[in-house]
Amino acid sequence: MLIADSSSIISFARAKKLELLKKVVQKLTIPEGVYKEIVFKGRGKPGAKEIATASWIDVRKVKNKERLADLSAKLGQGEKEAIVLCEELDAVLLIIILIFSCSLNYCLLQKTKSGNI
Figure (cartoon, rainbow, N blue to C red):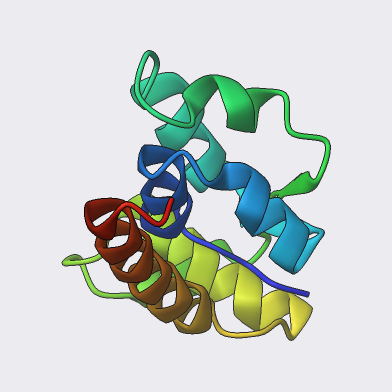
């Protein structure tokens, strides 16, 4: 199971590559906080509409509220929820998604500049 925070999904949305993310991961799990950040707070921004209707994205509620409170105040709510959800579901670390997202965006940018996309 893969869990993502909002920045990794938004990166794919900005690059207009959410379909590519879907093909690669097939199923993605996000906490409610990430969903709200992308769909409600991000209304009108890249990815908001697509995530709201994405059947391949499973939205889950974090159960361990105490653990959320223990995490650094420097983290956003979505990031905290993604970390705790990873722990609760014994899922793949979200940092893997972030690294993949950044690498893919860089590659896409280079290919776009060179005319290969």
